[in-house]
Image 1 (cartoon, rainbow, N blue to C red):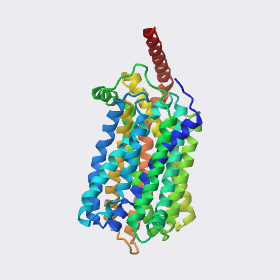
Image 2 (tube, rainbow, N blue to C red):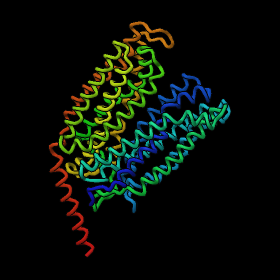
Image 3 (cartoon, rainbow, N blue to C red):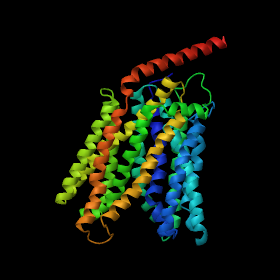
Image 4 (tube, rainbow, N blue to C red):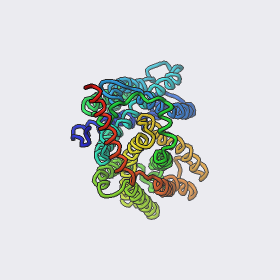
Length: 456
């Protein structure tokens, strides 16, 4: 069993999220624009579509998690899913941005069908990306290092996607945005396939019980329901993603109406991505000296400090101060969020150690629901707050409207970061980690020895 990973293994794991985010960020950032401005769907119909698919999305991940736990192949139980899902996900991404080629009366139906297929494929690949981390190494430091590559390359893929998609639409579409989006997503889709095939070729499942069999659903649930550290992670994920999505969707409003400089919002998004990359890079080095829970709490404090700097920028209309606040807040949040994946991997080991069931597919996939639920709630919260404070688009905002924007962009996320610093305090695996991994290593070595005895 290998605990130390090669650099090529870590880079390959990172490319899984690079390809994923290259496609997914383009879809999340521009799909509404494509539906309304290119395909000609109404805003109301598009809003209902997103709500329905968000509900549908909540079930797709756990289903793939159960399938992963029941998979047995010569390549492992998680690794084959990179091979199986890469081409379907790539094709679904192109189809998602191809409904504009069809008659107008068919486009809404096709939007539902293609978005549902895209969501299923995204859930399948995303489950594999999350579920393989516990199998890469039994060493939490090595997991953190591998996850750092995932976060850095994932954020890089998202940054490239956000910056490149519209120029690609312009270059290849000319006067036809429909053609431009289809070709642009086609280019991203090809890169996605090569990225996932590279991951499949280079990663290995090094932590697998020697006598492991497919995990029945009732056994998986046994490893989930009483797993207190896992519940801490999923609750924290729900809360933290409410803050992330509310803040990100409010950024353009803050720069346009509070700082009177709409154009700087795109630069602020890039600053945020770079800061999150740097925060993720720091994590493997820090957790060698400090407990993971403490590192998360400190970095959430850094994120709150960044929100305080943004509050100062809102008071004196300072763009430079605002960029500093965006950077500091994203740095702390990026570090905290990247470590949550590693802590989730620890809960998989805890389930095997405490309850005798290694249900990494279900535990990691259901943990991801926290992000989905948080993002779904955030959309409702954001619109309700702005409406309650009488925000009106495309006019000079009243003091009440400005306050509503600041609640979404500054005060609310600061409060949520502080709440998450409290909830994560209930994560207790740092004290148990060394004994847990020692016991599991002995158990797996015993299984290997017993297997060798049977073969003799």
